[in-house]
Image (tube, rainbow, N blue to C red; front, side, top):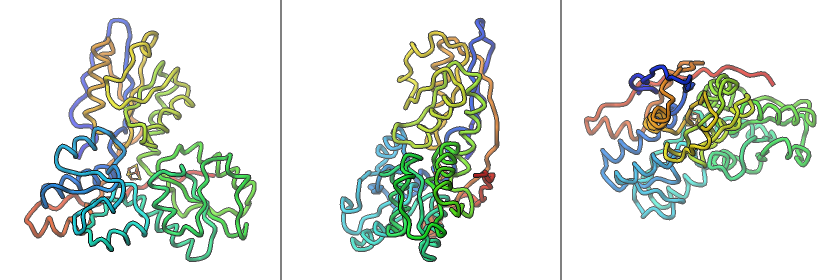
Length: 347
Ligand code: SF4
């Protein structure tokens, strides 16, 4: 699926009003796969399909899937015995898998493969008895899932303010890992502080902050200094969307706001704005960005300059058991997998 279907209309505006549109923006491969998994499950098995937690952190997506017959629950004990449940892109702990098995649930695990990669790192380093410092937001579903892989080895580090209180068993056997959707720059501030306390702190084998998060931040960093106002489309519980607002401000945007949809834009924000930056989080369908572009065009921002800092061509295959069932039922199997190659960053 193309991240940006169709051309974005653009025509010069009389008073120089302009939109700087970020590329990449919106759906990442993990979100695309998770949403596709629920849609295909509904098509194949019929409604209802239960989904543990929001499949991705976007209100519009959740409402749309609810309309098609998905039932979102907080925990597996709300799913009737023997029913089918999809696990969200954010991942689940082994305890959740065990609960589902105990209740005889048919599971489809839509955990993003890049989250699974972090889970595997956690297991690997826990098995070699490392203390793991997981940089991330306490209480976020992804962090809960990763921590659940080895709770006795993992401590969550919310940010630099937590560093002084960390205690480890052996300062020479400590590694940091991270949530996939953090601000790259803020995370590195935390890592530097951690390294001051633990000079032999080990880096993750590969970047945990995923390619999509990194790419969207790079694009908005380029736009920020040129924009009077930046608008980020994304839900309040979407970590990567919230980070984009912060990154825009740090990059020099005059102001930055997050909205779920065009109707939430306050015209006061645009009062003195000639240039408006626009992007969207990794869980946001392009239609919501198009609606914001239409809203802005209606208010004089007819000229659109796309600021492209990377092209993405990452796709993940559907969960294995769903693929197998689709194939047996004669449905088209999904796309061929392509592994992302995020750039290394230095600590
Ligand atoms: Fe996967 Fe990154 Fe998308 Fe999260 S934001 S679902 S880790 S690709």
